[in-house]
Structure formats: C-alpha cells, structure tokens
Image (cartoon, rainbow, N blue to C red; front, side, top):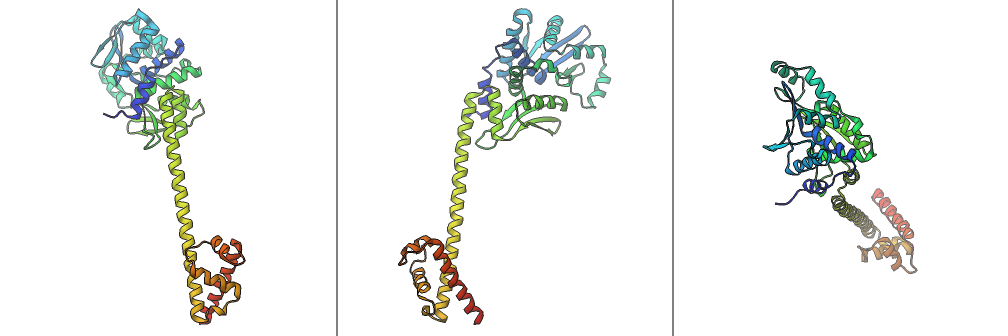
Length: 334
C-alpha cells in the first residue's frame, strides 16, 4: 500500500519532541485540546484521550513520561488513554493551564437533561458527563515562545491535520470543533508570517493554507525537513513543466500567427498577379513577391537574407505591407 504524503509527514514529525519542558507542554496541550475529554464524576473527574492513530498515542505516552515520569499513570483501552487518579488529573490540567476550566465544570455541575439542552447550543459533549477540551478557553500563556508555538502546531497537525500530495494540489489543514479554537490555531500559525484562513465545513472549522510556498514554510516550522525537500523537488518539476508548457504554447501561437500572415501575403501577391501581373510592382516589391511565392514557409528574417542585397526584417515587413495595400486597392477598384 502506497503511503500518502500526509502520512509521510506525520511519521517524520512524530519522531521529533521539543527539548525544553515548555515545548513538551505545548505539544501535549495540542494533543489534549484536539483529542482530550474530561468526564465529570461525583468525586472528581477522569481524563480521556482518544488519539486517532497509534503514532499519536505513542507520542502522547512519550510526552506524559517525559513531563511527569512516574507521577502520572494511565491505562490504554480501546484506543483510549485514560487517567483516573483525581490528583494526577489535577496535576496534568494544572500543567496545561486547563484546571480553571475543569473547576468551572465541577462548580456548575449539570444533570443529564441540562447537558442535553446545552448540546443543542453547539457545545460538543461526548457523554452525559463528559466534555471535549476544545470547548475550553485557550490557554495562550502556554504558547508564548516561538519554539512552543512550533511544538503546538506539530501536535495539532499530528492529531487533526492533513496535507495534500503536492503532485495533485497544494492544501494544508487542521480541523477543530469550534470557531474560538480555530481562530487560536490560525493566530499561532500566522505569527510566523503566514496567511492561514478559517472556513466552516459542516459542523467543523478548518484552518487551512493553500499556497505551495506557505505549505513549505509550515513543514519547516514543524521540522518536517525530508518532506519539505520532497515537496520542493515536486514544486521545481511542476514549475519547469509549467514554464515549458507556456513556452510551447507561446511558440505555437507565434507559428500560427506567422503561418496566417504568410498565407495572407501569398493571397495578396497571387491576386495582383492575376489582375495586373507582377510587373505591375516596382523592382524591389516584385523581387520580394516572387521570393515569397517560392518560399511560403520562410519567416521575415529569412526572406530578408535571401534578397540581393539583403534587407532587414523590418524592411521586408514594410515592403509586404506595401504589397498588401496595393492588393487591397485593386480589390476596391474591382
């Protein structure tokens, strides 16, 4: 099975982890916002991560180990990573600067009927007592430094992003569940001089880039250097093909124009010959008219070189215009 370009990028950047603790927190925050849920219990909360791929699950576990060592334990079940100890959940949420959001949920405890009412107002609850972290207020203090922003973008792309095969189209996107989160992601991407935009697609919001140069830049930001070089090679080949096509089209247009002009010149000369004879023309015009009949495929420069003495391209064009005017006058008098 052929691996998609998007999968290649993810496999490449899945190996990278920020060296600084702050960068590791930023990347873990991205995973938690993209795939994390808190489920409210009577005695606290449990934390659930639902990574879509094994690559993302492995990256999350690696970050948890790097940041917390044995201080946080988790179990994996049915593609979920679950943290059940209340103190450990609190520690994780405080590290990610999300504790205030969960505290608010606990204080504003809702029964199942009330939760269903809120769900109709476009807040994505995952169960009667669980809620996606994408609904929380974005903790901007976690992604202040450029290195942390890069780690965050990498994490979001791994979790909920994709990029098209550059052979087919230039398109990079990150898909989230609400507009506030989309605007936050867009703002972080655009802080690197890019021009990401947001569009709504059904019930999701898509942060996207369309220009090839910007996608190259975002690959660089995410440290996908091998994929970046692959894409640059493809872009060079596409640009070369486009340039060749433009040149071929231009040359074809010039040939068509030359052939059309030569046909008109021959028609004018033949009309003069039929009506008056070529002796009706003066010596210089008659010499060129006879040469044009003998060399119907020659261009103006070639015709000029065949004359005796040789005449410039502009000189040949001037004489042919005179012949055309004579032919038009004879047609008008006919």
